[in-house]
Amino acid sequence: MDKLIIEGGKRLEGTVEISGAKNSSLPILAATFLSREPSVIKNVPQVADVFTMVKIMKSLGAKVQHNGNTVEVDPRNVKNPVLTYKLVSTMRGSICFLGPLLARFGEVQVSFPGGCVIGQRPIDLHLKGVRTLGADVKLEHGYVVAKCKKLKGTRVYLGGSFGSSVLGTGNIMMAAALAHGKTVIDSAACEPEVVDLGNFLKKMGAKIDGLGSPSIEIEGVKKLTGAVYSVIPDRIEAGTYIIASAMTKGDVTIKNIDLRMLGAMLDKLKDAGVIITEKNGHARIRRERVLRPVSVTTLPYPGFPTDLQAQMMAMMCIVPGISVITEKIYPERFMHVSELNRMGANIMLEGHSAIVSGRKTLSGAPVMASDLRASAALVLAGLVAEGVTDVSRVYHLDRGYENLVAKLQSLGANIKREKE
Ligand code: EPU
Image (cartoon, rainbow, N blue to C red; front, side, top):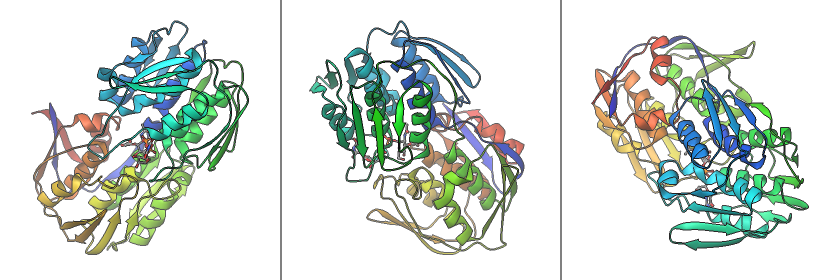
């Protein structure tokens, strides 16, 4: 296993380019299976979750060529719609095969994914969705076994106790694209990654209205074609570099960014004293001399994203004053708290909120990451801590950040990767 060694205290300066969105790429790659024709997906980040996706697609019988940031999928020979526990347990996002495989083959078996460190990850909304479209769904020996003759369009309400579901909306949108008649998804997720998937489906010939709103209408079609499509930039990666620049008192220009997708976060950062300017489609991040504490509550889009909660907390650790960070999507997503405290932060957990008493500095320490975004938060903390921080279990970061070490090095960070 590899670890990252970071010597804190370097100001980040320069230009960094954001990669394609991981959380768009995964369902879009699964959606290619809705057609019998090849598709070409561009701007796909080279991250471990994408490599896993490619492995799964090949194991299902597809021909896949993966060159750099382009993935060509020929799904003609996909035959065996079974996703084993071994495949699903390495990446929970593989649940997004449920809708497309069911719609194309009339049957699918997907291993039940179970929980993970960021909390329970139920799939009841996915199952409710395909059942409402007419599938017979059983849970057998740890597998979801879904069958249907022909899915039928209808009205589906997809709101859950924690709001809408991103991959749930994606799954039902994909299934409904080939269903008979019209489907309306109420309480649909409005995340840009859902819009991106919908735009890819439209390029394949799907008829979809209302993307980006809580009510999506899909008129089923008989078949979908292959398509060439380029994935949107990764708003969570962009948000992570924005925070990195602000924390290190840096001056970083970010290319391939869409600031419209980061409204809630930018609003909070401006309140904190971060200066964000846009020119020729690039964003420049600077900050006022002293930052102010801000309180944040994560919510479904367009609210503050849960995937930037840990990084925002890392920043608040070095802003004197009290900030309260409340998690409303994954109420247990606080695994980074104890590790940040090991670095000298002062964070107290109170229910689903973290109360951060910011101080001037953090102190470098060996820390262990528990999930992708928690790991990113520890890297950010390491960039500003006094002394050396070792972040172990780098494989979490590999799942979602393309070339993280090289990108940070190019901005002047003192960071390297080593075998543990
Ligand atoms: N939920 C249910 N029932 C369901 C599905 C979800 O109760 O059937 C709950 C979840 O437990 C959670 C909330 O609804 O409390 C939202 O979950 P959602 O379904 O939206 O999450 P997801 O689609 O499984 C995607 C991202 C996550 C991101 C969430 C929320 C991918 C591959 N994953 O997961 O990304 O945190 O949306 O925005 O798209 C990450 O990139 O680090 C990551 C975890």
